Length: 250
Image (cartoon, rainbow, N blue to C red; front, side, top):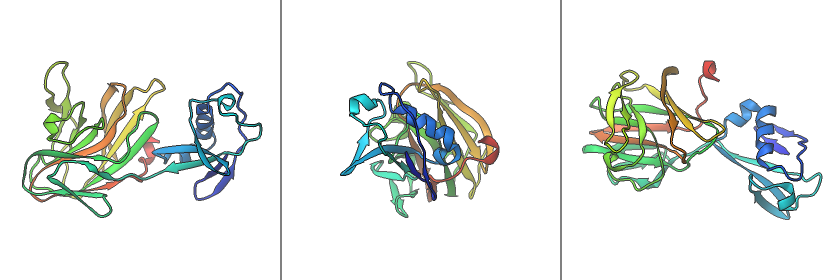
């Protein structure tokens, strides 16, 4: 198994013919935990004339992999805001890393270009400018059409310019409850999305490297996409999807 994390490394990993290739991922996290933690997603490829992606739920037997097969890890460390999944009132700039809004009466969202249903993922949002304490919502949601925030389903997050989070009630509209602290222009909001082995997610927020505590646990089983929702005048945020998790949390 060959990996490239700024340095080249080759690992010999033994797998039984009926074991899923998911075991290779688990072994790589044991061998290179810091490097692997930086990937938001990755693929295991088999160079057979040209590169072929291998499904992690398949086995060497089902894929007809020969003993001694040489595999390659290709990882993704960066994502952006997705122009196809944003409200009309939200505009993008700087290679789709920056989102801004003008004159919005209601929160309007934009989703990231990638979603997650396993692993541990951290990214940051810098608050470049805003005018009202309810202007910026940061969180996650399933991939869906972007209308107003109040119309999105299964949205989980923090109004980081205020000390409020969305709390969901079965069969009812979400309500606001106390969480975290007020933020200011220039603050950096960190988002940590973690999945356990059963695929159940938790969500924790940070402000300038300091944890605000776990915001949600036991989130429903599904894929979650990073998102922000903006309201008000002259609201600007910048995404840093390659941010590193604060040292004391790793």
